[in-house]
Image 1: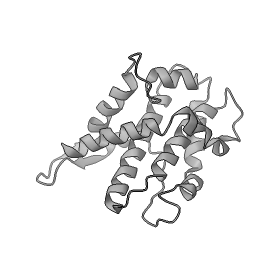
Image 2: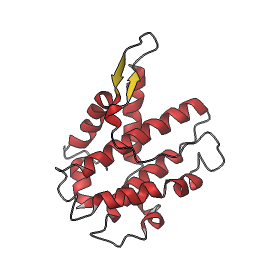
Image 3: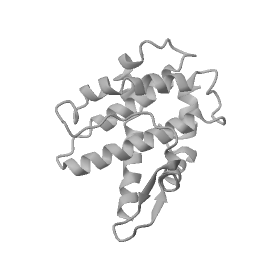
Length: 181
């Protein structure tokens, strides 16, 4: 449906917002973590994602809120991928510590966000573990609710598993492994 096409669009926007140059713009939020083994790269990735969603400056408040909400859900799903046991360097690079550090700075990042600093419609994007329990109505005509995870995971996995040589997504497993590990 149209909603899920928009979610896929937000996945692309989030990927664009977590490139190396975007990460350098948020380095101050991760400065307490020394380079290398202390989760700094994971912190920079999540902080850049948070900045990206707080920078959404859409004139339509409802649309902006939807975009921020979806990017927050997607960012949490990416964090889950990074914390998963099959992510190659999650322990030695203290990935979880970096993710936690970035989400702990969410208020500060929001206060600097172009779309949020003077906007009372913004909300803090927190680290949400267990979003697999969230349910969502897929359209207005039904009372049936579907697991949000079942709709989000395929979108995340397409981005994450895309390892073609022309794919330069900052959120592909190849790219994440290169930058974090």
